[in-house]
Image (tube, rainbow, N blue to C red):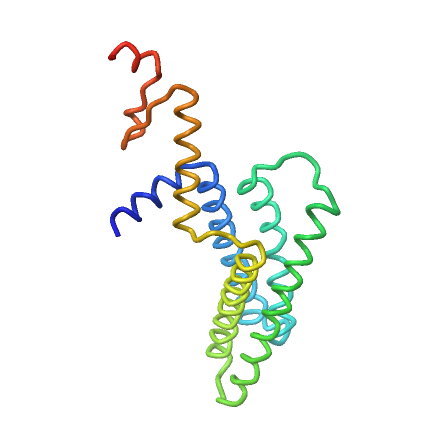
Length: 192
């Protein structure tokens, strides 16, 4: 287990690991935005019922999600390409929002069936929203892994670590356990 944690830590310091970490953190941030907006429009302001409130909250959260993922996680700048970037993002967002609508409808059904008050109903709607996106995220991951035959995370980490070590070796850098132990080949050659 310690070896796997060491590999995970090392992988998180690679470019690919940082990208995946930033992608995950973008999801955490936008989930927080979605939950806050949903709590406000449904729970506090009581503007709409469960389903329209869920749709609104998730559309609002999709805007920062796009920019966080594009600029921070993927490191892209400049103008967005409508067909290659914007359209695929909104198609996936629409699919996940549709899935969350099912969760909101179920929350409404069970809330009425169980006779929940508005505060309890708000909690149920928030929980349904998080669960819907979590289930959709896992399903998406399973489909992508099966469709694209993606290796396991441990295999991927090993592959990326080996590739980074090969690049470092090719550039004449010897990388030790600690990043501060990196020595250029000129220094290594003088030790021989």
